[in-house]
Image (tube, rainbow, N blue to C red):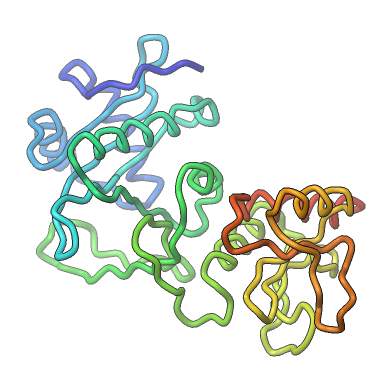
Length: 283
């Protein structure tokens, strides 16, 4: 699907409203009709917020709202506030193009960073976000301001870790690196057969991703990202300088286990999916 990405315009209001209501319904934060009117007016006027639309065959199928703000560490930062594509148009590139368009606007405006957030269990969206951006392990909290006009709803249990772009931070209350936990949650959402080894266990695979009781990815005691892959694939990645055969500590290299180099250009989530297919393929 080839989409036209462009600024929102007056004639888009009805289609924009349908998409905006769909977005707010997804996050269970519906608004009174008057609030949508105010938001629409501000978007058209560029009153501190900006809007883009994804048009396909003459219809608006996706929207993105973004804004710029400052911080003590940067003069200008871009925040992608809202991103929504109608369900029939998903998986065809509209969301990707909207993200790239916002990124382009951020660069043109001289912003030094562009970031956004989503619920940790929004697996469909996060599959895309993992391809176009990086997750830095931030955990977001919302302090309720009862006079803000927004619904006073605390996030549901288990939905406190959001997907953001930003400065590096270690995820709280976990012994595993934040990036590994993101991979673990993503794969567990995609495949109910995926589980995480108990942290209380000691030794090989104490904190590992498993499928059918078999380990396919883990973090080693020295902090390396380790995956189980076919021997030929391990040979290929080692020859390319992306990693080395894994040594669990007894001096015997494991032919089907790769310890990824910290500076590797390989996508860790993609490698974990590859390992999951390899180990779990017999299910």
